Length: 228
Image 1 (spheres, rainbow, N blue to C red):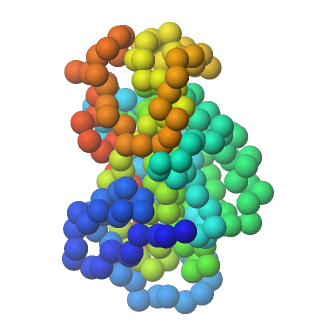
Image 2 (image 1 turned 90 degrees about the horizontal axis):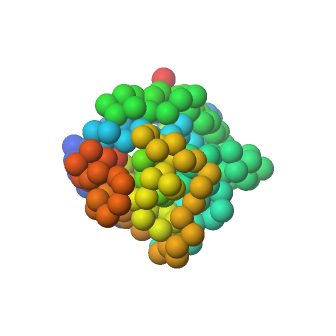
Image 3 (image 1 turned 30 degrees about the horizontal axis):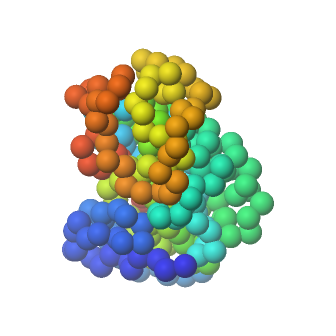
């Protein structure tokens, strides 16, 4: 699996092609010794009125892909993207030897709010991935897939894009939207969907979801990590 290069000190807003994220900063650490290190991972919701479902966050080696842009979403990823349900992904990943540490947020993340979790990583399991649904959509989610080799850095920050799982049609019909003001979780639009994971084009106001309220413009979240 091809991974994005580690960002060098002082270079900002470089696109990480393998993960579809932008790095704001990443200071190189001098301690490259083997063994696990604990990291604080903070996820800030940058949208004006979308709640992010309790995010799934994990560290892992290069054998693990949480999602692959251009590929069909797994049933487990679709459940997260359509209903904010990470239980299937957690069950699947809990038996994967490539996963080092994993947690799901205790709560969703309101607009402008930050959720912080702690995870361990080491040089053999250095990659950070996460996903969480934008709940007033059909199947939009914030996602990082192997964004950085965290033990090589003391701290860093990433702008996180919004992906379309391609598993449910973007009808914007409130009958199929789990988040406020609709509350229709577990009900999915039967119309054909795109069929592959891609960058989300936003809310277009074609039905019940008002773009002036629920569109996010560009990035959906900021993720910061810091070695403890």
